[in-house]
Structure formats: C-alpha cells, structure tokens
Length: 499
Image (cartoon, rainbow, N blue to C red; front, side, top):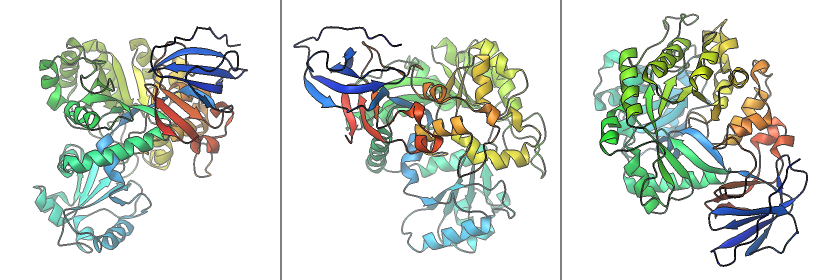
C-alpha cells in the first residue's frame, strides 16, 4: 500500500497548479498532485485540502513520470517524413518502382528514400536497377537500420564512388553519404526538429538521448534558444568530436548553459560493428546461407579500449554499439580494461555467460524492443540456431542488468509505447509471440522507459510527467501501442495538453 507524505502548500513561491483526482500506478486511491514552478511540492489524498493555484481535474487519469527514449537519431528522424517511405517494399524491383513514381514529383537535389530492408529479398539492390527508373538525378535510399545506402549511378558519382561498388554501400561509406545528405539549411531542419519534438511530447515523452552523428552541443543550444523546448536532450559525442569535448571539459550530466536547463552532455558513442539486416553485425559464427561471412568489425579492440579510456578519464560515460555476439564480447572486454561506465547499445546477440558478465561490470543494456519485431524473420534466417540468445530482455533483468529502452529512430518510430508493447508481448501484426520466454512484465517495461526506473512520482521530483487516459498496467499489448496521452508536463510546463 502506498503511503503519501503530506506537505503544506507554499504560498508565494511562484506558479502553482494542482492536478486533482489523479491516479498513480499501484496506488489504490485518487490523489491531488501540487506543482510549484518545476517541482512536485505535494501529493495528498484527493480532496483533502483545497487545490492551490490553478486546479486541473484529471478525472481519474493516470500520472506517471515522463517517458524517455534512450537512443534516437533526432535530425534523421525529423526529416524522415519528408522522404520516400520504402518500408512496405518486398523486393528490390518493388522499391525501384516506388522510386520511379516518386521521381515524377521530385524537383530539387537528390531523391531520398528511407526504410528498405533487403535481407530477405530474392533480388539484389543494384545501381542499374535504379538507373532504369531514374537516371538523370541522384537517388539515395537509406536502409531501415541506417547501416547501408543504395545509390544509382548519378548518386555514386555525386558522392565520389565508382560504379565498382555496385550501388550498395555499407557501414562507414554509408554513414559518409548520410552525413552529406543531412546538410539541410538550419532554418529548415530546426523547424522539422521542432515538429518532431512536439509529436514526441504528444506520446508522453519528456526526454531523449540524441545519438546523431554531429557536434550536437551547438545544434541543441541553437534549437532551444530558438524555442524548441518540448524535450530534455542528452546528446552523444562521437570519436571525431571526442578531443573537442575533452578540450571543452564536457562531462556526462553537465547542463549546457543557455538551454533552459534542458540540454545535457550524454555519452561517448562508438560503433563497433554493423547490423543484422545488412549482415555486418560481428558474430562468432557465419551467417546462415549466402556469402556474408560473420560480419564486420568497425574498430579494432585496442583502439576501442583507448578511446573509452580517454572518455572515462575526462568524466564522459560510454555508449558502445554492439549487435553481434562477438562484438558484444569485445565491448565488455573494453569496458573491463578501460574501467568505463555506461551502456551497450542494442546488445542483440549475446554469448552464453556474457549477460551475467555484463551485470558484474554494471553495464546497462540500451535496447530497442521494436527491433525484435522488425528483425524476427531476418534473425530466423541468418542467425539460425542462435535466436534463443537474441533480444534477451528477460535474461538481462533476471541477471541484474538494467534495461533502458529506446527506438533508434528512424529505425523504429519514436514512440515508447511501441517499445513497451513489443517487450511485453514479443508480437506484432497478429503474429505469434517470438521467443515468448524473453518477454517481460508491463511494469518492468515501463521502468525501462523512464529516467530512474520509478513509476510513481514523488514530492521533490522535477515535474516531468505523462498523463494517461488509461492504466498501462491493465492494458493489453494492442492497447499499449494505442495508449492515449492526455497531457505531458516538462519542468512544470505543459508541452502537450488534450484533456
């Protein structure tokens, strides 16, 4: 039974509002929640005292801490809706047809599509196939996992590649092309980012960890100063910017001045291997079928340890991208040798014993449950006989590894309710649960979607809150995906209100 600590109201402190007749998760009785400026100053039984300041009747809606997406590529996500959606394409030929139709309306610059998944296609993506439908303008198609791009000949020439590449580029070459595509005028990209931030707030999101491959400090300073204030942002730092971050004495958790207290320094991000769809995730065993080998290592172990040691000495946490089981094992060794703290991003395929090793090192698993739903058929095809060791959310929790959920948007939509539903049900689109033994409970999934794992706000907490029309702990997977958010409060300020 929950006990509420009463505290007297504080007249004259500032802006006061009271959320009346609210419900808290696992609490039997309605409460009134008093907010003074950006802080929760009282939680008391509903109606036990007149509401201070502005009363807002929640009529039994559930209040929980605001949700957090722990892995987003925010600029890429914000511009995704402006590009050709290829997620429904089932073959290279079908993709080319979609691009041919889109080219009829295209005017300026490269024609860009997003979201193709070629791992199970029976035909291969080639420059010639795109040339047959669009020859005179560059075409750049980004894979759903962001680890590959598919170009026509005009695009190969524009970005400095020869036709020897065949049109499909992976890993560093793909990232280089994507980086040039993102050179959109700030006046445009900032508007799109603000739109995306407002949409995230409408899903109860109050914060993100932005893993965009950019010097994000300047980006978010500018955006917040220009009014994009719907989210807290913890930004990642990549190897090409690590020395600059150290010179500026940035440390994880440091609040960047002049950002309304919303922008903070996040982790040092390093990508050790590729992805499952691109067959570049670095594994112990060969991929089943085809000639993909066992994946690709993007950084040598000694270099990984050296970079992580430098970041750790400067007070910067680490976030290590590792998907294949060998990449995860090497990442854990680097954590052990460098003494770093932080996360493994994705942690999709693990060696037996490495989950407990991860727990012993205190490394959190920053995972994206919706990826399991997107990749289940690909995993069954290419990781045959190993899928019981993939997307091991139940095993992580049972071994004492902390979970932190994200979307990796635009790889999956920036919607924490999709992640929660996927983690709980291990199913989507009417399919049977995939490795149901790795499903987790709703409360566990929600705990992985809020900053500190607590589902109940407390007196003294910063007023970052999500207001839900229904109790998520009583919802089915379908209801979780469609969860209605009545309001979102950030720092005591409404960023979304549909009450």
